[in-house]
Image (cartoon, rainbow, N blue to C red; front, side, top):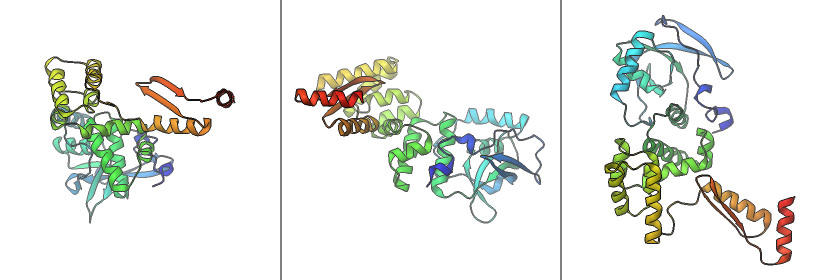
Length: 295
């Protein structure tokens, strides 16, 4: 898929109109708004003909938050249309806006304003993922599962996926590491007992240590920095070779420098700080490396 044309990397604002839908939107009325430089119709669709997307990134919805949104919809109406794709016959599948769909049903509406787009399965997953990422209410585990699904189903590289969803490749890689955590850590993360930062700090530890540190995080209310320190202490004490996998972006820069300088380069980086080591084996080689750096 051509990311340049998809609008995904530029954010959900390029896919959904920002102008509010007026509250007197009637069942037979269509509004025309400009989205990404083109005109699109917002059509009122019956709620009982719209179905959820089985590939929706979010695995759970907060009922209290849904009720709050439903109350807002009762008072103000639906302020932003959902995006749907044709399903079969006179039926549609939600691409973006499942929370608004659920809340509208709770609010007792019979119709909802929607933009109809003919998306393929990959685009459906990308748009649904981006909507949730930009609203910052998708759990880290749901993010990781969505990344994995997109990579596996559509044969994308992490770099290609990163460009599509507007994230760095290292952010994709680090989030997906959560899928390797032991079950207890995943459960605690899903239940909100620990944060994604906590889980990422211990996911590289042996399973028994993950469970032990998890218990301390919950019972002693450790913050992420305290958890990171404990993780590194365990790595040093047990002589575990690495807690963190090599960042793909750092590895790529390291290989690029090695190619330019024609010598061995090592980059060590963590949390934005680190060092670069450049090897040379003669005075002449040292002078040549300096010349290339200066140039």
